[in-house]
Image (cartoon, rainbow, N blue to C red; front, side, top):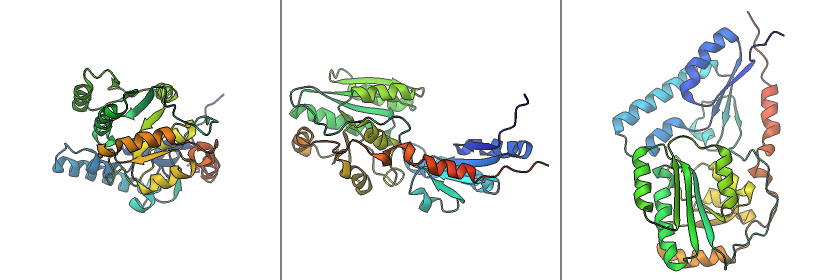
Length: 300
């Protein structure tokens, strides 16, 4: 049997666009650019230690490659609603949020027991702008008011300097369990940590590269029925409030911790067992419709 060449190629990062375009001339496939991040904007806001010149050069490179690639891209996929306004020149476009691809947990009316240890979790990619340090400080203050708690920090820490900071901040802290990897961690391992957690902490910095977005962890928590603590963000609040999926707090105001503890212990989380907007299955029909609309290129 003769293998047929691919008819559609999806690229998920700007670095691969030049190679994908060269391949398109040889193999005649349709090219999709799956925009999972606004990469140039991330360079500006997510790398506080980098010099302005270095950021400028990196942003210029990203924008140049993305703009020069436009004539050869047949379809864009945007992972965030805000990218429509941030990247209006990416056309034609389909919006497919970073929803949960797995099976939804069928649970509701969840309460955090008062008489058992509360296990908090910070997981995923760990960088300064994701608020891990702020989460540690908040948890240390929490212990002063409610000692029957523990914090699991489990994730991919790509920055060596930040790894040293996390080790320093958690050294000899019996209630904080730190597991870091400089290599990406499998999604299955991340899901195992969710299973063991009572509350997931999302202490993100509300900077312009994060605040307008909907982090995939929010959808994960909603699908897995894990109560979450996240900063005061109107868009996130509107998403979680109808399902009582978590609490919005100020991780900088330690004096509010007693009220937060009482809210955690008195709230009935997840008043509905099914949250379709958190699941990939809600976007799947639109994805297949987009794929079917891409006609194969004619050979020759």
